Length: 189
Image (cartoon, one colour):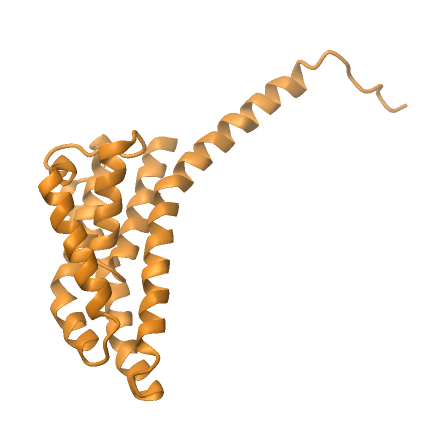
């Protein structure tokens, strides 16, 4: 049960991050799955661990991070990413939540699509206001903040479920120790 909730939590976090930056969460998941046991990608999602896919994702991350910092170009990028970010969110949700096969793949894809699409819609609507209010000088800062948030939310989405599982194990062991401790406080009279 904990693993199912952990996978769903990871899926929500990864999909939301994809709404800010489509390729950064995909790249982090691909590298994490390739080099650690924190994420196991089942078929067909395990293709993300292929070196060619990782290379393409790295190139796309560099392009998106760069163009997202240039006024007017970032707006064009946001329009083009109206397909890419929700699609990335759908892929991330489906690849993380369906690891146990408990969630219908179509529902997982739809959930990821809506999560990433919602975050993307807010970002796309807010960016022209940032450009207008700062005359374009604030775009790079807002974009940098979005990249940092996407990076750390992806990392947290991967690690927090592990922390929760470790906390549950620790609490269980603490309970066992407390219950079987060699000395007991005297009962109050």
